[in-house]
Image (cartoon, rainbow, N blue to C red):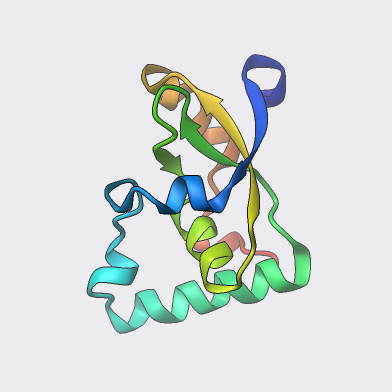
Length: 108
């Protein structure tokens, strides 16, 4: 399981938000209509069910590796803290399969 192989931490959103290069995301820059709809579905799912998995950040610089939309959800909803796994960047492939939720699987 993921939580046994890496360190779970709680991060201030401000730490992640203060470096805009870490949060560049097509959804906020120039979204397609379907991306806006999908983000709204994600937000509805989080509102109803909470976040299923913590985000994943790079342990060395706290760059968001997976979970940008969940961070944007927190920013958009004035949430100050988010759970995250801090991993070495080179280990990303090992963890992505355990935390990725395809848009068709959002528990709405």
